[in-house]
Image (cartoon, rainbow, N blue to C red; front, side, top):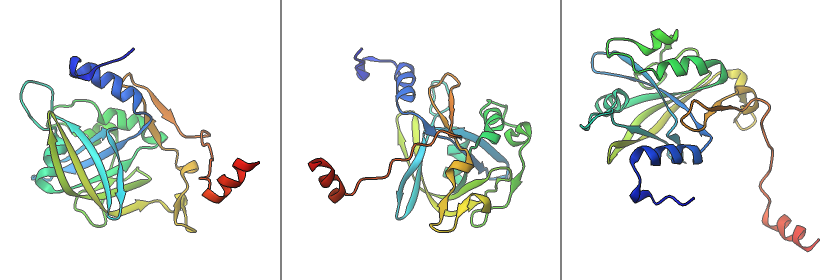
Length: 213
């Protein structure tokens, strides 16, 4: 089937796009409002975009309804300029899903999910204590596009528990970290446990030699 986007409803576009752009890493983002109240929310419209300087991108749609009202995460980042991306692993999956619940404003997602916080190293927004890795970020820019906001965050510190670091690189022991990924919007996720495929990049000279064989 061919789908012409300009003839489709936004929800239809969403349904197809999130099923095709997959699997996606999940950012469990902690942010803080002016009164110091914490917010925790998962986003799978998320990835790293460059490394020099290190920048991650986060897509945050507005709250549902006919008016352009930003979600708490986008509002907190715009006003406070800081946030933390907590890496979602298998053992955090259920808690992450609780944080996705649309709780009333006076209810703490972290408390409902049974999560605690720990001080960050550089930014004032705490990370999630149970997260094995986290990226401390400051807002580089926020771009408003339609009913969405693209938040660009410059990574200023990275916390990783020692057991998941190979000091030779340093590298992340991804086979042991067991991050999970988001698939379509029907509650589908993927595990990375026992699912790695190793396929080194082919040097050009090696590729040419292989072509002649």
